[in-house]
Image 1 (cartoon, rainbow, N blue to C red):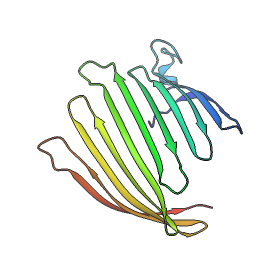
Image 2: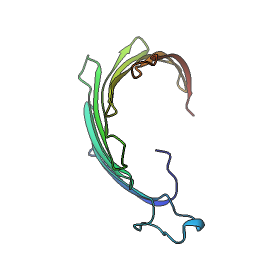
Image 3: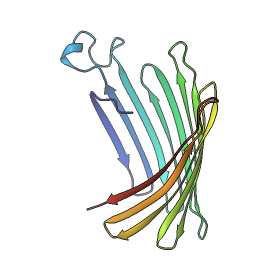
Image 4: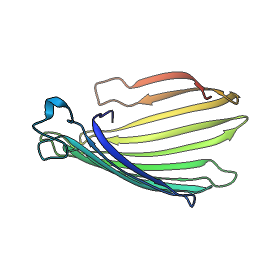
Length: 178
């Protein structure tokens, strides 16, 4: 979420596919916040925990975050059946504690499929902000130019609340790996 500060993270990855992590971040850890301290009631802190499992054909994970102003819980799974697209499904919910703010949730379904030398992908996301339920859609193709370079082109549409025009965009990206 772009938050910074002093903290600690522990992670675990096992060859049998299980992985987990915990993180504690004191966002207000600085000389100016010496009065509030770290991990105190007066400080602004963020805690995150995750657990997951990955295998050759399926996997999934759960993540929980508490950042003093809201809590979030998310989960996702993927399945790669032989000869069919990879299917990914996720759900995220944020419980906002600030007064006047609404809880939010998102549900996403995505597909990846090898087409020619590259991968075609599509995703549909439904986002509920407590007032509106809006969709976001994207389709793209990733073409590997060589072992270290790939080019990806696609388009996306984001529905906006009534009275505001939807956002549509076209993207071409180049990825480098060394």
